[in-house]
Length: 287
Length: 199
Image (cartoon, rainbow over all chains, first blue to last red):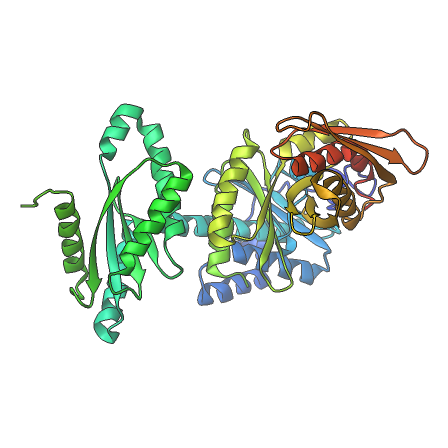
């Protein structure tokens, strides 16, 4: 698909070259092989994981290499839909979006870059976006966007190891929503999910920089309060209640805590202690 | 190079339904100033609300603007350009000055004016438009709050400096200041769309 536009474009879009690549082949082999791009990817991969930042880095290099004043890439994928990126992290104008959303490709100003190189750039960007999304999804709970159980377990292992080695204190807080099953049963799962999303947002507001909040079960959450000896959990609880109230979220919760290294430096033991204290507060005896 | 936090912030915004593009404008000191989303969304206000929540977690001071790609397309089909959006309007009760920040296509402009939230709001809006680079050949003639009560519209009248017809705008919003700003924009939006691309 090819869109024609130029200096006489009346739309006000500043990317005059609305030329999508009509070449669907876009790989790093044969004629489409682009050494500069491949080398850049290798360099990036050796230093860090590919992500959104890589896309902007590629666009900058691409613009520099070809003397472009503006460049945007449009990516289309089942998992992330249509996404547009513009040189320097600038917003595409809404008018550009209306034009560009029709087809994926790399749009250049001026438009003098060979199609294979544009295709290679698009493929690299697509790969970076997919990898970033996959990495984010692997580490986060999809409903609340806070860390998932796997990330939490890793973080707890690391925090416990540091606590054992250096004596750095942290407090593990387990949070259990009270009677949440009733909410789901009475008001439906959609409303329940809405409350859980809000709860996740309130948790993110309540934790301090350097702390970690995670959803570790259906209605169970966990927080690692860094550099905390135990009493900080009351401040955290107050902040959480305050944020929930400001969101109009009626959910109540119970917490159980364990502090390292005072209680233990073993992650499993910390979890067991916090869990036991939580159920003790709820008046439930665990056999 | 973007930090992991910046990358995840942008990814979270891009994960919102219908979001096509994220633009981030920073202050000279590197703090995020304005986050502009272009969204093909059925409910732009819900997108804005979700984006504002996300932004508040990463950059609490940042303003969030959502531009509607669908409207841009329909405006284009009608021969109109992109619209100017209100980012924030503040009224300082101690000195009586209003400050208005506007955005269009990722650019922002700020205007200040005294004279209270009604007249000051309209004048600050004109100043912000000029700060955006628009040549606005109009001066403020009247600002009227229809009943002097809450939830009633504000009407702004602008007089042409070039002997063209006066322009009128009307808006009702949460307070007088925002109503005055939106009424001023309402009076000028079609005129501004004809200037877009020449700014």
